[in-house]
Length: 616
Image (cartoon, rainbow, N blue to C red; front, side, top):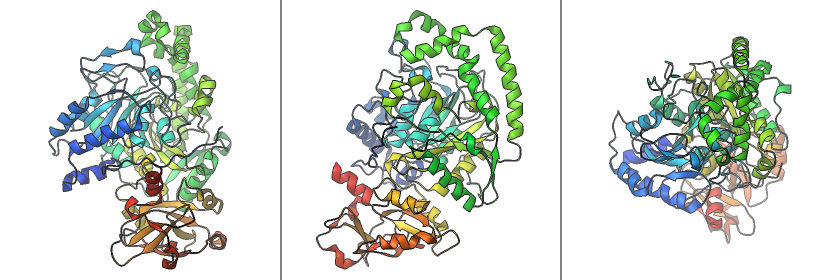
């Protein structure tokens, strides 16, 4: 495992922001932005990133601007003016579909059902994104169109097969993106890019107009910056479709999920010995931290034996579903074997070895496992697992593409075989500032429950929006749950500089036992300065001319407070900071006498923004 080189948050010179739905729709409502402004900013962002491997086909900018001008808001268009992308195994009339195989490309006559529903709801298509060829892979490197790395570190994989879709959302290039999910392709990339990945119950959203991986298992999926955004998109694309023989009537989840109360919530978790989490990457520590926070919030965690789940997952690549993977593109594979990525060809051609008797044995075994795992889920609201047990560098994945890829799907490959609904959600950051993801999985048809629990986890963790580093709309209101006084859980502490996640002193904060509470801002009464002679900022409260400054709130055990105080050097001190919602917490402040030679950096909105702008 190579050391991660944590990237600064993605910053752009425009005023469009992260593109999360709540912020963007509010900007439209008050007239601060119009859809054409957003489209122009997006294409400039895409151009500024250069050849990042995210896109296979962009909608021409003029065409996207025309679509933006034609937007008519209204109740029938809940996504009016919202930019989105789709994985390039989905059809759009008049555009080529490649499935990341140039020789396979064809120009579609009709638009995939889920894409058509989004456009009817007013969403604006920006382009088609890169993927592991024919949606076969969980790592994002099996493509001739360049390898999209996670925006958090250019040396690390983004996950697959929906690699480009996840990166496009994480980097602030679109508000949401569609992927597909057969073995975890809509969830693993979410974990590696710090985004939310919504994998609906199989059959809830149509696969008509999508190049199949495994027809009986495939699901369209949604990548978004928040659980609420994912739920709103899922509500639009869901519903029966006569054009899809695998479509199934199922409850369509509400577009505005209510976070489930964590106090008393019963969640199933893997046995400790079944986690298999990588220690070097920080995943084990991140999982332990989240489990602790859930228990402090009152959740009841019950260990479940996941062995039958894992056995079901093995059927996908060691059972008859190999033949189903091949069946969708068998004629092309036979006629153009040289056109396939070498790893993809190896996996697909294994389908030739499956016999009819293998298929029926596999179906019987799966039915037995469905009954066994259903019993295992009785008595819990949902199954909570890490989304992936570890991650890899691009170089590591290219050196051992099949074995390492298999390791990524430990907690995802069984999902569609067992007809589960799942929501992958950020579960924290490692000491290196890399995202760690967890997944909430429920029985078929319980998508709304999965979203509700995922929203509660999201609120508990309180991270910025993926690689944008920006706070979500409403973060300040969520911070009302931040205790402003000492409690049994410790002291709430606001940090604005080197202790922020991904910054040099953040690992020290974790060593002291700090637990994430919220990502929010100060009230608009502060100025921020880059202090002279040290790589630290100074936060000063002012009577006028102030602004909101980005910060993070952590809960620090009482036993560690003395150690932290001993490490604070003048002119910094521990004081009281007022948050955007009017509540107050303890935090780092600067004595005015220490501002000699300091640079006022308030305009950048925070220490991260200053560092990113200064480097650019």
